[in-house]
Length: 208
Picture 1 (spheres, helix red, strand yellow):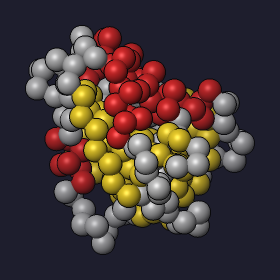
Picture 2: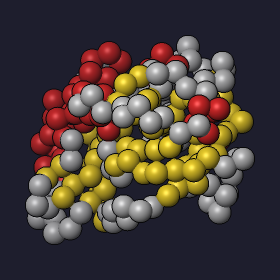
Picture 3: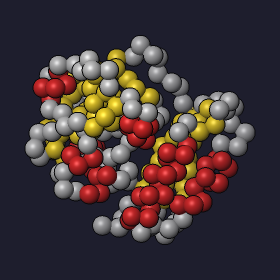
Picture 4: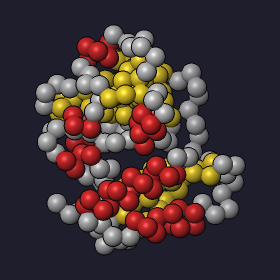
């Protein structure tokens, strides 16, 4: 399968620049190398050109195809309030832990779109996917984190069939999170958080 591009979605703040830029560029470079994509080394320059003169926060989306073509789009971004609580549901659709492409952020989003379509926006803000073993993997646009009272967040391992999210990587490197296999029952026994580099950590409740 070669009909896809790599994606990085970043947050830009005029006062401080791109949030977690080194981690985003490192992931893009690593993914490009492993998948045989050219042109990742030009990403930084394209990003900086896209936000030149920006006066407010932006959501910035970069794509890189196999031939090395980079496209960058921007849109105004409004951070969600700190006291936001998302409603999360578990999808019937399942991820295949043996699908190594799930470890990369790409435009092949069919399984995530299918999961999202299982619930209306009124029913859920984010949808969590399990793998074929019933293990928690990730949300359609977020990594999953569980506060079980130990003082360190738990997040599923990549081997379950999920993306190495940039926020997830940062929290693990800061020793604020560690990998641990999770079941849906585990999520009901602690405080659930969903997060990505664009939005940060968001408190969530699991619906049935």
